[in-house]
Image (tube, rainbow, N blue to C red; front, side, top):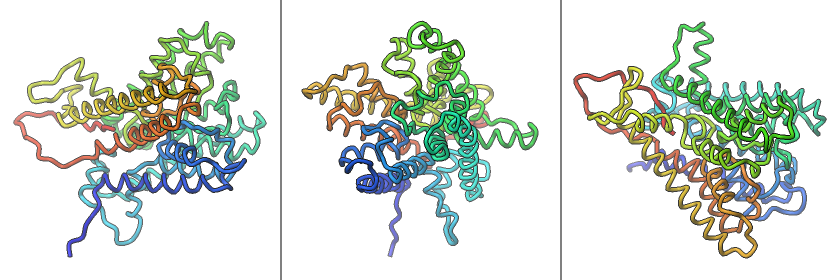
Length: 444
């Protein structure tokens, strides 16, 4: 009899649905919450936010018991590493094999290198994750001790995993505000956010350069990621500092104001931690927050958003235009029409999801008697959910049940729905007589 195999998109969907169902059931246990039991909607919202590494929450993380916080930590780690890592873990078991379709997915995310050795790719992902998270935790731990927090080891572990996975969950109701003047904690968190949002291919490429003393060169995708990540961080830092120095940051010393502006530029790229009140920004800074949250981090990373490389391709289309073959040549590399098409489709579908989410939340809140949320706060919330950022202007728990269900769907669509769009489908490609080498640029 003919065997029926699940498609890659079905495996992706089932994987995250399994995590969400399991996490919701575990958080509903009386032992997971400090006082009484958690409501079904709150448990579902928190689980989806953790699995989709968003950070939005209707219930403070500190209200969960120790076992409940452990459950959240496991959900964040599982969701952060994502479909690529966990859907190919079966390779470690004897008798398993890798399909051509799954090879295409791995190649899409990690380039052509070692495509015949997928086990090594998985080991590298897991090893790099553990080493980077451990490094960040060791950086944070002395600061946690000096701050006098309760159980500094667990606090370092929890915030380390949450930061690397760009989840934004914090054990404290004020997020990281209490650590704003703690250089060890803020350095560790920033290091983990940036490395987690770069993507494993970029990290591996950098590791190769260091190991070979520069003999191995940066790949095209790595150059794009490093340049635009640095440019976005610098742009955000300068605008936040000069716009808010005499407003939101007026009560801080110069070093503290510089640190707060830099961290805001870092955390807006889907991390979700905050050290200042998000509702206190001026309008230009508010708009910049929206843009940075929508862009997000790198492809194949723990970050969300439309991704830096998507923005790069859209800028090329906007500035340089497409040639008569539907391609763009840039820095002696050819950007194929397939990649350009994926970037455009990815961006348009993200905007469509955002519009539907924004429309439904404003609709439901307009019929809610107790609603005090304005359009600006709702837009911020919807973009944060779509980009799986987790920053909020403080209205998440005040929204109606229907609005919270919309945000749940938005987080799921932003993390899993958009991800599924770029799972590659093998199609024939037209061959031209003269062509540049194809650039390895990742989408999604």
